[in-house]
Length: 511
Image 1 (tube, rainbow, N blue to C red):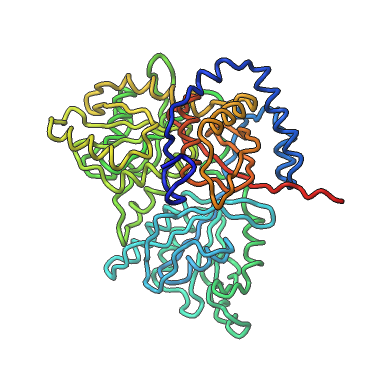
Image 2: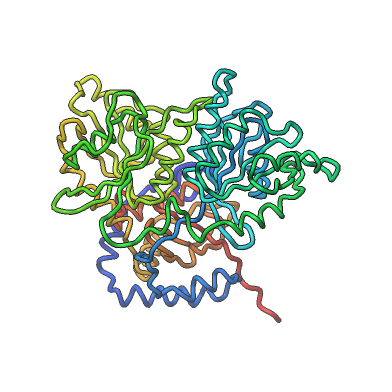
């Protein structure tokens, strides 16, 4: 089978001949590479470009400021007892169906945070739908979950079913919210018409001022509610705030419960800084710790463990995922701990995907290596080959958090990942690389046509993001091939890479 033919568009692209692209790049001077990129850029003007393209191309030679302070958007939490319409309200605010909506109270979803926007104001929306619906102790459990949401939020939407009125469960949440002293907007949901607004007026007695009558299902009153929300949101999250650039590099320790995150942090810090217990999920709040490792100071964030996925999750476990996401937002590199004495689980893979999606640099730490025997080692290698092939680019370190064995090997792995995460490729070198790669391994023909790469540029680092202007859609397998060769050629070890396409048609010449 020739390189120009592939059996299906999702198949992996496998070249049939060797190349010497790295050697060819070394032979081409920076001046020649820049001249080639300038020529390609000039040719791009013959294609229909939109305003975003023009903006991107106008700033090709600008330095993007990776050292600028990062602002974490304010957080809006939606709380309330089961089946009052929280997820429906989430979807209404987002303007799309994202949150799972079912009539069964307490349906759990993996994803609990969403990026939202209203009147030009960006904020993070936290959906607290999902806890074990158990008649015994339900009031306490709802209040517990609501309290964790309140701790993370800047503004709170407290949703009550206007048709039912305030229940004992609602009253339990009200008592907690009064202690928190945070802005609360009371949402009287399921007010579908003006005749039902009288039901909402009875909720004045909860002590949160005007109840906002809303129909999350039909959208009635949602705009007025969001206007009020935006007026109360601060400029940035009090929980995340402004992350100052510079200073110690920030590392998130993530992994499922009981893999040794707290033990590792304590061993590196040389103190019992974090409570360690063999009960999974002991850690509840992220704890920052400045640690000297390899003659350098690092800032570690120890996070609550993520439990295995459950159909119904209790509040504390449910929020472990949310807090891990918050830690990743504040980190630059994530050390994902995997316990080698247990079979690699779906949860390990899911945590890895969460880290990749966050765009952070990545180091894999295989913990409890001192408990390994030869049989387990053979099985582990097979599990890594099958389940972790998509992160073969991440540095691997074998450690024992309990004894501190090989903890010093984390430092070079962290440096490798962070250097790749920070890396920038000049426009000249990138386009020379793309030209040599496509020349040696052209894209497969599709319907007699062959899409071409017109021009490429790196639009940012941390993580490295690239944009390719093309004449047609590149097969997913070929895009993965480009990404893999970018790693091999420029040394992007330990960082995710994003390669986006902009398909552009040639401008029609006027007669």
